[in-house]
Image 1 (cartoon, one colour):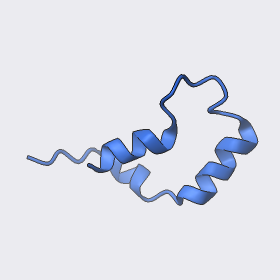
Image 2 (cartoon, rainbow, N blue to C red; image 1 turned 45 degrees about the vertical axis):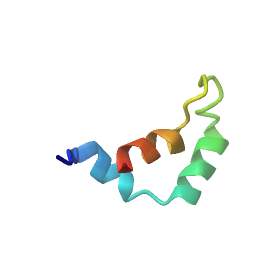
Image 3 (cartoon, rainbow, N blue to C red; image 1 turned 135 degrees about the vertical axis):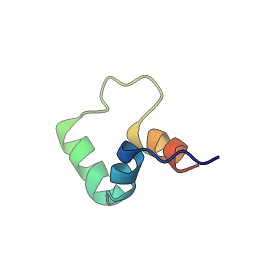
Image 4 (spheres, rainbow, N blue to C red; image 1 turned 30 degrees about the vertical axis):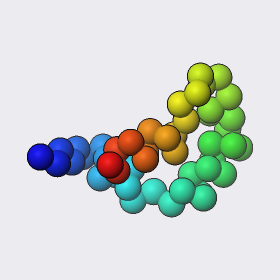
Length: 46
């Protein structure tokens, strides 16, 4: 059974390239430990 949450629906609407530019400009993945936004998003889409 596929479980689609509201959060995953919102994330799926984001433009990856624009979001990556924002992440890079604000250095929000600076202290992450091996699990970035794109990996999280890919996990939600499966």
